[in-house]
Image (cartoon, rainbow, N blue to C red; front, side):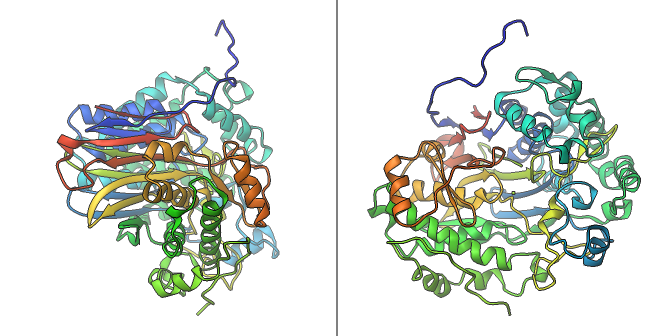
Length: 544
């Protein structure tokens, strides 16, 4: 580059909704365009979502990769379906395994390295979605990602910030394969600098040629297992071959005449549903939109929800409470009575025992809508990258606990507690909105805040997306810079411990929203959709 811009300066701006009959929204423009290309070629929303997801592994590698996990909620035109493509623990993973390798005092599996990696599920999600609803040939869907990985692309501003922050961490840069893949020239790429990923292109070609089989039962699987063996990991080819994603029934929670759907545990989506069920007991709309009284009630409801979720949510077969018990209306009304409108409180769980992500959404003129999320968890996940294949692996194993009294205790073949949660909104059984908000435990908080803005205060999806957010951090509250100073002071007066946000990677999340303009009552080929994309990321909503 001959001219060196200051890429950090700029001015506050407001995006406007995108109106179209076919639309894709995600956090990188090249990925949105890849999905849009599939729709223009006669594909449907599932085809668009897969092409977008594949491209995202290349253009936003700080958040996701070929070794990610994924979840999806799909309106197939007739019904709502959920897909859990989160990975399982290797067969060798027991509490004793981690005690021997990391000490008896270890509370969780490690944050980085092979002992944080569960079987990656994202590629299986692409396979399952295409087998069920895809229209175009599977290989066609990966072609844009392959071309971009081989040709390279200019790294955008926000991706570069997150990339550089992560690459500066020794816990990541020293992981096997990381620097080779993601630190060309010994550093993170600069803004506008070309980055190519030919190793990932190789793997994407193998996935395309075999319909994904090479990743779980072929050449790629063997390479993953060999890399694990070489670096002391427990994952085997048998662990990969045994893995299957699971179709599930999304959970439902009513709110203001609509129904919020989330993937059931092992994910944390139920936290947003608990919080909304609690807020249902209050007349939020009567309070000033951005005032401290409204925000306080939302924060307290979220704190109550997290108290239960962090105590009880795990893989369903390990939970001592059912989701139905956690969403019981009488129980939620009881929890709501604990909220004091005049002061902040710390809450414990009510029922006693009996985290880097990309989100995308796509919709087509035939009415199919896809809410899809995939993630390597913390920035660049485990840090482990399989050389020659470009498979950067998530660190979802860190989501397990080693506390034998907890439902989320690590175990062979178990799925850990998961942060990534796609969401979907219906009204009277008809599809209204596919949406999600990225960012660790910010995700259910983002679901709550944006839905309250849309359903209680009638803000449009882009305005709800643009609005300043708060983030509860387990004892302290962070308030985004755009939040009115009087609201922040009002929250402090109520007893909230408001502090500056310290995590430059997660920040306040990033949402993508597609709202069906007829709310499921007409023909989307006539009425179309309104789409929003979060200004906190490099992305866009694109449609035709």
